[in-house]
Amino acid sequence: GGSWYYGSPFTTGYPQLLSRLAHLTGFVIMAIDYPLAPVGKAWQIVDHTLAALNWLAANGPVGSSNDPVHGPPLFIGGDSSGGGSAMATLLTLQKHPDLLVGGSRKLAGGFFYSPWTNLKCNTPEYYSHAYAKVVNPFLKDLGEAHVGDLMFNGHPSENAEAFQGNALEYVGHNKSLLMDPIFSPFHATEELLRGAPPMYFAVGGSESIEGDSTILAQKAAMMNVPVYLDIYDGMWHV
Image (cartoon, rainbow, N blue to C red; front, top):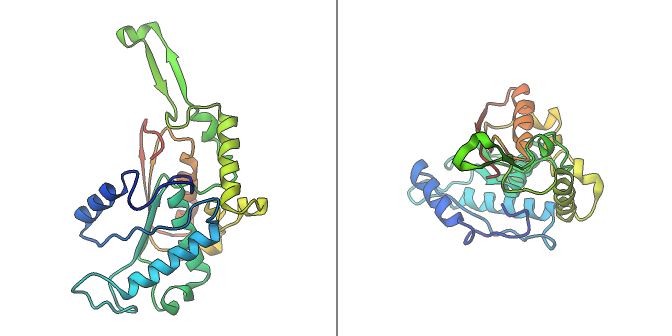
């Protein structure tokens, strides 16, 4: 995560999160340190991710066969912008399966926490989940309530404009890539989604980008992809 601008395997709580995931699943978790924007572009981040997957395929857990072809199952995941790049990598392998161990391995699945998948930043939730402070005398001692996406509490149009500016950095200011079916996975084609591995989405019910998960999950499910979607009512981004 981090809007492709900040974050690393060693900051913003990722060591704790990944340790917890490893403990709960029994899996080996590998976090990659890909180049950040504005230096790192979408295709470079995907290339780094593919290189990491190929390394992991040949260097699996101690005690496993560590055979690139017949090793333990490989999953990919991420949150927010990292979730978008993880999905872009999954879709890249759908189009070019030879990029993972020469085509002899496939991903076993993907997990995405509040992924940023629509670089056009125009899903309805930018407005319907806009932050608001509600002052109501019936709240008595509480006085006020906060609804919508607390993480991004600006005006909806300002949020969308800022997000799209961020997205343009990610794709090297090539506006045509804002709807690219791989780098902007919300726009993935039926051909890319058909036959994809199982996907898990977790998203807040008050997020500005809830639609980036829910709509993409529905599109994948329509292509008979096994999809699991958890929406956490009242929660904001990640």
